[in-house]
Length: 480
Image 1 (tube, rainbow, N blue to C red):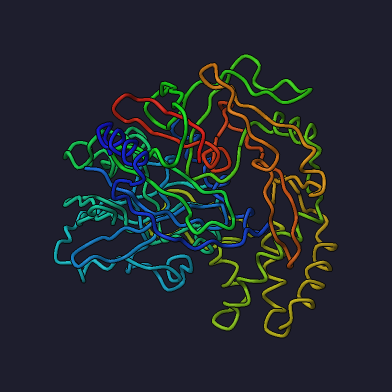
Image 2: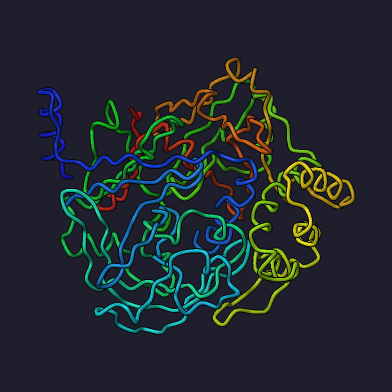
């Protein structure tokens, strides 16, 4: 939607109407503490280290962790849910040629080139290194359609990756099938043109920009909205503050400072990244520890970390133990040692880790234990025995007394000379585990070779975000 349509929308809203923008009720999922174990912050590390017409697309809100929407590939179109991710630049979906032992692939929708009349073979090997292993496969070409209103965006010759091996539980448990990257071409694996780059080059959008609105209201029907080619004034108020992109790789920019009562964080400026594929607010571990201490959050104990991981494993293992052995279950979940996949460049073996041991013990007992309470007791016993559990290696989140949330201080990110404030209600997340509600800090530590901050969905949910490809800048305004 170009500036012309923005002006029309403003006039129409004053008259009680609006442009024809798609607004679709979208499903909400309950946020579970154990889901943060497999959140994409852990997957982002390797990528960051390696790289230092108008449409409205409805987004699905998965546990306030991943927002995803629909695409189609091929002719006739094959449906997929993908994370629209500003922290990567490639499009990939599971392949029908993946092995039956690759559970993340088996349990999701798969692209079948034999069922598409517009498929063009490519065959070049493809691999992205994530924290939990290498996602690998090969490149193909086909028609990409992104459903929206007033009509879908259609790219006739989009090159994408068919994933034949996906690492770990992150992709196993995700409600999304694949990822559609919206970062810059410079970090695209195999120098593939990203979908939005092709939209701009082919004149498929009114303006070379896109914008995100993410609902953080757990009772709302909509998960959010992605607008290609413009922005919808219904979802923000005031003017956007514009920050130039530091380098055309990620959507990164200079931050002035972070204001936390009684704590010095980023006093001389630091690098920030606007990342729709990351849930929380991620920064250097030392700074995050200062913030969490200032707001009264406490780190997870070894026992808590293990229990959280166990709660996650119990659910998934129970669905798989009748199909394969305990070793096979944990191997295919990416938690224990396994063979190199066909196209992987590297593969992390974790057979000696405590998570592997925990998974194997749960898998051994899962066939005999059916009720949740007994499994909870088993996990508690196992966690007591696993003395080498390291909390930082596991959940990496800090808990908060929910009754104290209203008394906690605001935290402000100063960007372009303007304060972008987050209240405690915005940076504290309510999660569930074993049916109990807990409050956790939205700040999580991640140490990188070059210290930086990742402003994920916690921040983007509070501030409508525009990614201006044409002017190489990012804009923030208060969401409504």
